[in-house]
Image 1 (cartoon, rainbow, N blue to C red):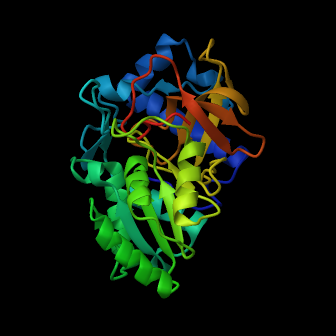
Image 2: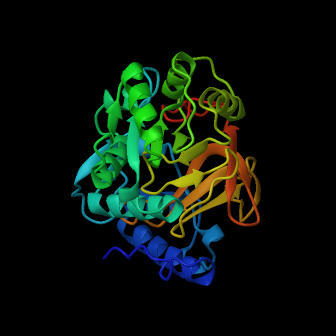
Length: 325
């Protein structure tokens, strides 16, 4: 049975650790791929007492294996955007409502009641592909918001400008969430002064533009939109939860998600804070694998927040992260 997403159940510290260990034991017993990995790195389940001791499955396994805990029935498959040169990750989602519950509660924790927002998605490349977890999330946010102007836009920049101008005149709280290259294209063609609108980039140049740092991206968007800050979302096909940054720097997780750091030279050495490659615990992933060693590099801070500075050498370029940070 899926645990409820509440601060009580997912409090930091001992409660989080106990639940993480409980989920680990279940996934070790009922996920053949994950069990084989744990055995390969010689981790004895009986020795696990801390979250940092739990083995983290390399994220590349989602490209080469079917990662499912329990029976092999599932509601749908989320696929990464990938490129023509790389294979796609596949996340077999057994309970799509658990994903919906996770991103709704996560969003509302950081941004409040969805019904008070107008949600605009500028995600052209994702709309053109099937099985995108990001499209599923934004589509549901649009549905819940029920605002007449909520919706997706492809390259309808002139129309989008008119909609945003109208929303600004109404002082309507608006979220413009978009893939990075599309936000830059729109900002450069149709600069507009925004005050009631939050601009949130999800990463992703997808080979459409020259790679630049996240700081440079944010500076362009701030200048073109008259903003003091640009927000960011950290999520991926292999996760059911998202972290958010409101100032272009540190990302913060919901209580059921935690980021740790592993040593690049010793990937089994995992620490609560410091610099290195990022490991993610996503307790919403109870039906696949909750413990994932990503290809992202960054820093985890004392308060549990984290930053992303790039990717490991030799890792595949991911469709949602084609940006040097």
